[in-house]
Image (cartoon, rainbow, N blue to C red; front, side, top):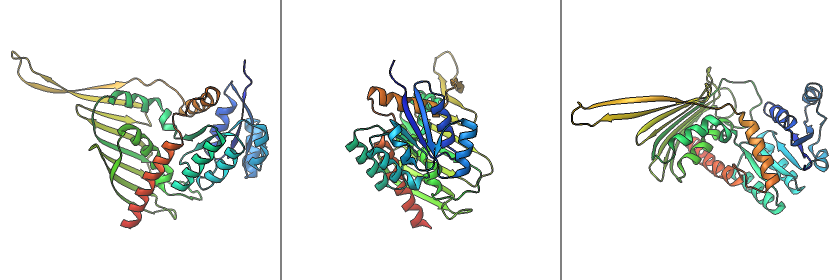
Length: 318
């Protein structure tokens, strides 16, 4: 049996805590420790999760084979590139930096180092999303509507809602359409923070597909919905309820029966899989087997390019 993969987690905030739990519970992995600047969080990890914690992530690097980078997005590029240059495989949380230049820097550094670089768009590992993609496979997609709405949280925000929330849906959308974005129209507004807290964008793809994405962090109700209209069906994913409902038209055409059109709906069965665990398992498998990640740096860069166009559109309209 091969030796366990030695892993460290850098940043144990809201998402980093879950990465720590996942890494600590994966049998093929040895969680060496975490790095966190905040003293209270370090104590919490040591007391509750019984994991060694250090202040400076560079202390972890000589002891690990791979790291999960879950620091604030403005620090993604600097921390990730330092780890890559040390020869460490990296799973970096979304949004993969805050600019196209950040993404390019990480991709180029990983290529020089010859190590795995995976981007944490965890919805790509959501079984409900997989069911939706399978249901529309082979059908021409006409319209996609996405809503990702959340209540406001008192935090020291350093990015807008496009980078914070909408990126998840942009990642899914680019995988769903497989066509270049031809036109972008977007609006947004700040309500609670210094950055845009609500954004809505209309996209037209080169193949004619239309899409609308709305993202909010000032909505009282949490909503995670995707609706897809194809040539002969309508599918709706409810990310909170973890279900997909598919509706299709059926038409009676027999000569001895009067014409009648009906809509048949079915709820697709979704197996329970924790997306964050599936994402981490893919990361480990890529390291072990030398396979490319399902969500690699090129995909992350494609999302960042679209983010830039949306942000520029919002800025021009304000």
